Each structure stands twice: as C-alpha cells, then as structure tokens.
Image (cartoon, rainbow, N blue to C red; front, side, top):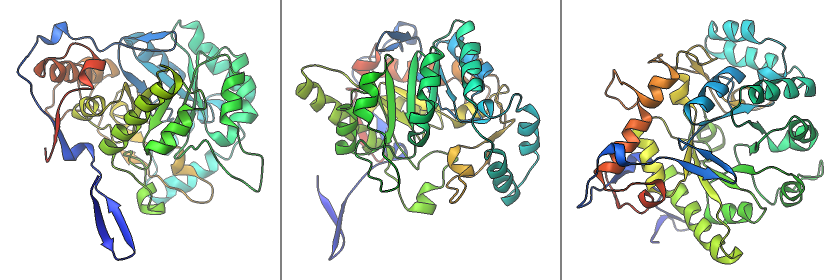
Length: 369
C-alpha cells in the first residue's frame, strides 16, 4: 500500500472510514425476502448478525433478553451498574437529569462502588431463565478476578472487551492476563477485543478466541481519539483484520475466527459496509440507545466515560426513535438509517445479488462514496 509522507521523519498509509466507502451494485439483484442474515459462532446460531455492546446505557438484563428473543445477542456489562447495585433504576434516573461535567463526576462516584460476584450470578441467571443465549463482558483488568463467578453462573459466551486488548500486555505492577492460557482453560467460547490492525488481530486469533472485536476510539460516546490521539478508521481496520482471519485459517489448518465490527456502527448503512469489508457481525451501541427500552433513558455512555483518572468518553444524548424491535425490523418512520437496520441490510444484499453474509463479504466497494 502506498505510504504518504507526513514529514521527512514520518510516513503513514491512507486509511478509510465507513463514510469514505460505498458498496457497488452488481449485475444481479434479488428479492430481500430471499436473503439470509443468520450467522453462527461456535455452537450458537443467531438469526441476526447483531450483538449489543456491553454498555449500561443500552443493555440491562431485560433488554439483553429482549434482543435475544428477537434473534440477536445481548451482552451484559458484568462490571456495570447491574453488578454493583441491587436496583440501579434510581441512579439511571438521576444520571439522565445531569448535564455536562456534573454527569462525568457523578458517573465516577457511582461506578466507584464494588462489583459484587453474587450480583453477577443473579443477573446471568435471570438471562438464562428466559431461554436466550447468555453472554457477559468483563474488561481485561477484571477478568481474572471475576471469571470464575461468570463461568460458574453458566454463561454461554464470554466477552473480554476493552478500548485496546493485546495478546502481549506488559506490566511491571501486576501479572498480566495470559489470554491464551485463560481461553484454553475455559469451557465456553471467548470473544476478545478491541484491536484495529492486522498484526494485533493475528496475535489475538492465536490465543484461541472464537471471535475478535475490531475497533477502538470510534464509538459515538468515545473521546479516545481526542484524549489519547488513538484511533483507526473502521473500514480499513475491519478489512485488515479480515485479512488476518484469512491468513490465520491457512496457518491453523482451517480454524475460522469471527470478525465483529465494534465501533462507528451508527446507522444501517454502516452495518452493511462493515460486513462488506469482511465482518461476520457487528456490535452495536448508539442505535440501541435510541430505543424506548434503553436503560440510559435517551443518554448513551461507555466504560471510558467514568474512568477514575482519565475519562475518555462522554455521555451523549439521543432522540428516542422507536422500540428495539422497530429499530431492528421497522417499520421505519425516518429516512436517516436509525431504524430498520436489518431491513436495510437485507435490501443492500439483495441489491447487490448476494444471499448470505459470507457471500456479501466479497461485494465490490469503492472509495469516495
């Protein structure tokens, strides 16, 4: 790839966001009803290629159950409000009434409460009792401490999610999490990320992960790019990690690791573009913050927003546009891509002549769309 000279001492390559690319129609079209958007990871099959981000503003046990019954996968944040408080409803109501810096300061106070293993067990049991696939998320910093409680509760899928997760974390303060050893000892599939480069993804795949999350710093509630200066445009990041998946398949004798785009998925067109660039599924945050059932009551934030020392996220306010079901399946009452995400994906695939997601990964894209 051609490099650009930033200055005499620094070169860089061009990278592209979802806004920079467009999907190209082909010579064949189909009816949207003939398109399948189902996908499978390990032994678990889902009707929708959509995971809800483990963020307190979009996922409660109740909304995770609702998404599961609609065909997606709700991932609960196991170090969020639902595992720190018996009933966080009043706190969520309070946060919704705050503005500006006061909201960040109050979030830091609220999230200073300890994580309670018994609440981890209770929340996961609530989800299991509903009959949906049970998925929970921890950050790398808390994985060793609470993993036993998560696995003992009977989680189906375990997500290790951070702004940046590496297979080679180095620390002089504490023994780092050995991802390869940890995943090997678990009896459930693990999804791990974020990462945004070919090499980092390849290392994560070699740990035995069932799926890799792609992206950091690009979410609607993140300010990582502003605070740390770290970000990679998502179209290029997903395509690079998809290349790592292809090469890892050759290296491992055919083991397929799923690529999940996690960041900059704000509208229906972003879902289609993520899969066109090589993703198997998308992890969605801000679109679900617009749902009437969203716990954030119209506000959206991630774990970075309440970091005790260096907040790298902000609480974003969104207009509620409809129910969770309407956001996924319509009917849409707006023309901006915030509703009927799955209907739009089906139509994009049908317009280009593809019948399933793996085929659609081969669709032609252009820059400048």
